[in-house]
Image 1 (cartoon, rainbow, N blue to C red):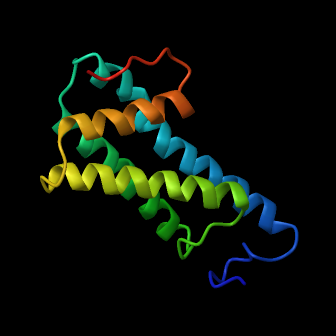
Image 2 (image 1 turned 60 degrees about the horizontal axis):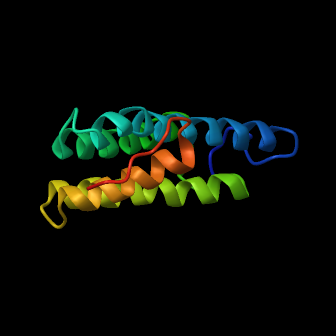
Length: 125
């Protein structure tokens, strides 16, 4: 169902909307994954990493809003990536609210780098 008023949910436009959404989601995840190895190596702190996680998800959500979308995933892949973005937001905001520690952030980032990165992953200490 298209609630956007922009044709994104109709016929031929749907694959374009879905692939665009997936691309934007992957870009948000890549912002985190790019910093991940430096964080895991101790080159940046957990506070910076957590802010990067939260900011990447917020930027993605703002892009979707600016395009007139309601946040609903447009494909199966988008549904899966939405869960990844939710984990990034939960982990990053949890750390910033002092509900978890740097080791928790490191476990999440290690997973993200392993799943979405191309660099070798280090085990958090």
